[in-house]
Image 1 (tube, rainbow, N blue to C red):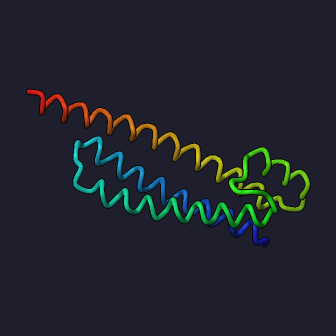
Image 2 (tube, one colour; image 1 turned 180 degrees about the vertical axis):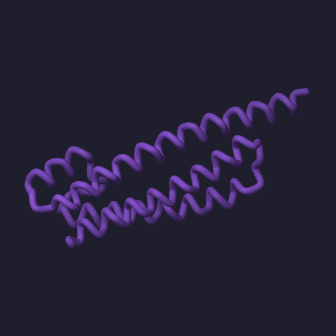
Image 3 (tube, rainbow, N blue to C red; image 1 turned 90 degrees about the vertical axis):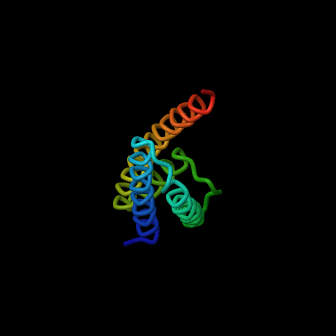
Length: 124
């Protein structure tokens, strides 16, 4: 098991935790609640810091500058064909990142709706 594989596995775990927080946030926003949003945001910030740190570690492992683009990773995997486990985990990470991005966008829309409702109520 390579150090890159371990790093990517850690990134997948962190993004999975981030997704769970986004789902909690979505539930709160869908219910029109705001009580737990500060706590959720604090946890998200900690995870973002961990993800950034892990991304920097990945960049060092493949000797690229941070942040590493998808194109750079694809090139690295072409140059290192023995890293098939890491390549598979990289694919899983990209899938998880896309899911997180989608949830984040959805939550942003829900938050905008919540703020609009609040603004409309205050205008009355």
